[in-house]
Image 1: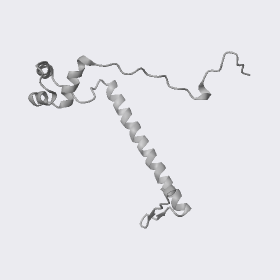
Image 2 (image 1 turned 60 degrees about the vertical axis):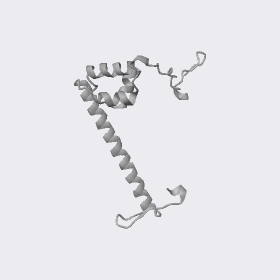
Image 3 (image 1 turned 30 degrees about the vertical axis):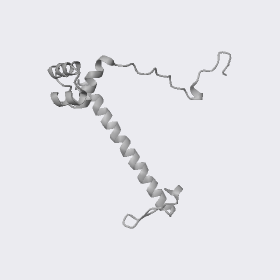
Image 4 (image 1 turned 45 degrees about the vertical axis):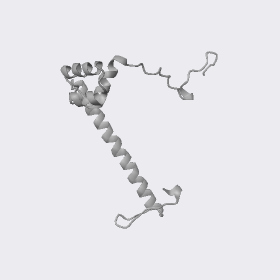
Length: 129
């Protein structure tokens, strides 16, 4: 905000970013907000990991096998995705996923991450003390 020449003045909270004390307070509030967000993310990820260890199935449940067979049959007849979804009572995303199961494409090859200079291996000829 300061780069654009904008300052913040909150009368009730006593914050004025035109002063050094107000600016410091505003920055500290930002630090605490970032810290709290990181803590929430950590707790959520720990809970998900604990659920996986306990064998919980995460995510939306899949459609039952009979519905999937019916969707495949409708698609095989040449029925469109929208009409198939309406006939079977599912969303278009479900129909697209089932239609694409037979046509799965491989993801593009993954490039190895580039290491920072300090972590790269030194050449064989280099000697270290």
